[in-house]
Image 1 (tube, one colour):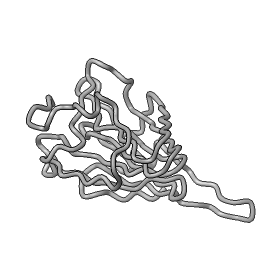
Image 2 (cartoon, rainbow, N blue to C red; image 1 turned 135 degrees about the horizontal axis):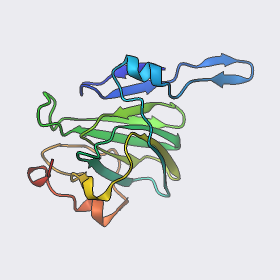
Image 3 (spheres, rainbow, N blue to C red; image 1 turned 180 degrees about the vertical axis):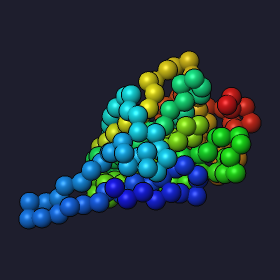
Image 4 (cartoon, one colour; image 1 turned 90 degrees about the vertical axis):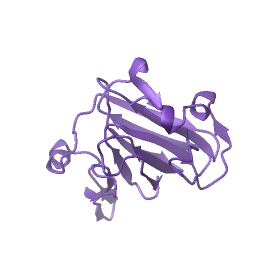
Amino acid sequence: MLFTETKLKGAFIIDLELKSDDRGFFARTFCAKEFEAHGLKPLVSQCNLSFNHKAGTLRGMHYQVAPACETKLVRCTRGAVYDVIIDLRPDSPTYRQHIGVELSADNRRALYVPEMFAHGYQTLTDDAEVAYQVTEFYTPGYERGARYNDPAFGIEWPVPITVISEKDANWPLVEAVPV
């Protein structure tokens, strides 16, 4: 695996290191030793799969607070998504900053999302599928979210939003987000 740290400390783009031959290729998508060597949490407590019918679907911006903070390894396994993370660590020099990365079945790229980062994505294709490896179990009482269109973040979504849940559309603005 090839690890590239983003401008948000602790958040990494992970590309596959392909071993190719006449049959196709082989690549490691997760290795606890390699994650540890980069200072990342190698624990996987839960794996999730999200399927989205329509391009323009927006899911996010989700995170969990202590004692259920979670890191995520996110990969698009079908179609393409624009994946966004926001640093919500109050003591971080990149607090409230975000990045967006295209994840697709074609580029096979993954995004490592540290604890206390809000995470969400918008589908760029119909029938997009996203797989998550998560370090903590989903714990509803510790779930939080930030508004996808909060001016404090200035996220520019690449296509018009076609589908969004009522919950995701109504997360509070950052000034009201409980950390």
